[in-house]
Each structure stands twice: as C-alpha cells, then as structure tokens.
Image (cartoon, rainbow, N blue to C red):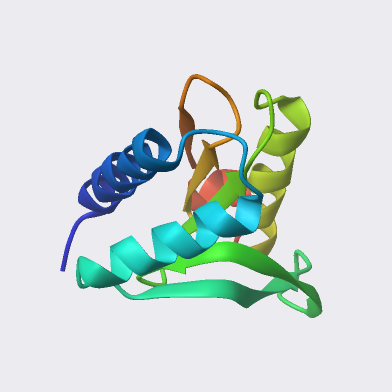
Length: 130
C-alpha cells in the first residue's frame, strides 16, 4: 500500500503531464477523464464523481456530495479549470474533507497557464471527528 505522500506525488506528476500535453482551455471534465485514465493505467483505484456522505458532529448522515475523484479511498481530488485558484475553491475542498471525514485532499487547477496544485490535510481533531 502506498503512503498518502506517495499517492499525492503520483497525482501531481500525472496531472502535470496531462497539463503539459493538453494545455489549458479544455472543460474540467476532459481533465477529469484524462486523470482517471492515467491513474488507472498506473494501477491505482480511482473513483470518478464518487458519492461521499456528509456527517453532522454527532455522526448523523445529513447529506452527500460527489467528489470529482476519490483515490484509493483515502484522497479526495477536487479539479478546476479556471484562471486561478481562489479562497472559495480552498473552502470547498476543506469543507468536503471535514464533512466526509477524509483527512487528505488535493486541489488541482488545469485552467491557468501555470499548473496549480495544493495539498490539504485535516487531523481528526480539526475535522470534528468523534
């Protein structure tokens, strides 16, 4: 089993290779499909538009959202195809991590000239987990 840091490195390298090949200007779905394809070729389990439960602080399920990608059941990957990442994108991913109680996430933007990727991690204490 690969460590979370190894998984993040693989995603970064793969996403960067896709950015170099496709450039910017495509719809987010194109980059999502490319990343799913290439991560699958690398032998990783990747789920596309995977439903994740959102929990209240007492553990009650209160809803769900769909992660762009869920890698190896341990890493949420949120994709963007915009000019630049902003605070709302960060808040979105942090909210997903906290609500789903998954500790690690990557925010990847294919839409700018400069490739952007940010890693986020929430500890059990900061995520409100019981």
